[in-house]
Image 1 (tube, rainbow over the protein chains, first blue to last red):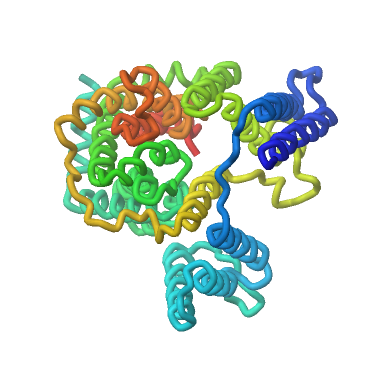
Image 2: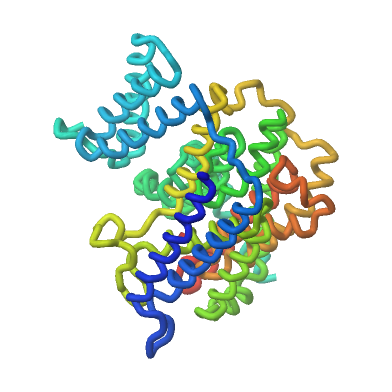
Length: 146
Length: 327
């Protein structure tokens, strides 16, 4: 079922990309336009999706998905990464990273509160010191300036 | 003879204690920075450039070149031990290097990567010294049609490398095309797939995609299996390759050096293209191609060599025409 839905997604994605690329123009007076390669890529994605959809209908290709606790752990990591990506512009790298690490250590690793807080704090301080101070990289800052 | 004279003059200038120290320090710093995922050679150079401000011109160039070489090699370490490429050109190292590490042969993989880098880099410098003026004069004539043909060849090689379903492989290559198309078209200046977003107009960084695909996948895979980490925690032994490793590796090492050097001469043909093409070439020539991707040591030098020889080669068009061959 999931395989079919994924292949249908490829078809839709390819069709949408090809349609959008068409509006950019394919061939102009001076040669290929901006839309030519995305258009071809869209057609390839769409065609491959059709082939895979027809194939998945005839073959038993059940993907091996995580179940039970494994599924929750995977979802926990994805949620943590999503939280960090969304919150960094508002909280800054240090705070967003600290909160994400605590959440992951508590939910995925099942670590104790003290261990989670200590490890997250040390890890973030080291990362900010190494990348922010020593290597001079511009890490995203929160409203409090760090 | 003129080349030999120039080479000897160069050695005379370089071989001082100060410059050798800068060389060692630059390699060390470059390797340490190159190990950090996401900080590639270019970023390492940009970050560490101020260090050279107080040096002599020769010392500064030695330092920068050493940092560049060190950073190029450093990316292999995380690829082999963690399956997280330090830079885009290290992606192919993950395929066999990390598999070797999982099989308890991390030392051999790291060793052959380091030795191969040294051999290929040295060969690249020697070849550049004697033949670069002639080769670069030809390479600089590479125009859009030649570059396009080179890219097509790279894509064909990528398709050849795919071990699973070729249809899924073609789909992923096309998806890569589509991802690369996001941003401003460098030819026409038109925005593609940006939907008004300023962030997307700068395009999607290849390294971010690579780290996401390899790094996050590895993390999710480990979390699912309740494995703490695939970090090779046991003591790494056997850094010096065995006789069998040498037998399997010396040809890929030399072939990768040659291919990497030639592609490095071409503006736009950098280590990423070279690494994929070399890996595909070795797989094609191998007596047991099925072993590639499962820990074949030939796959490590096949990838790792071509990232080093393009560096001296890439500097050739840069020196001759102020046009860099690599980013």
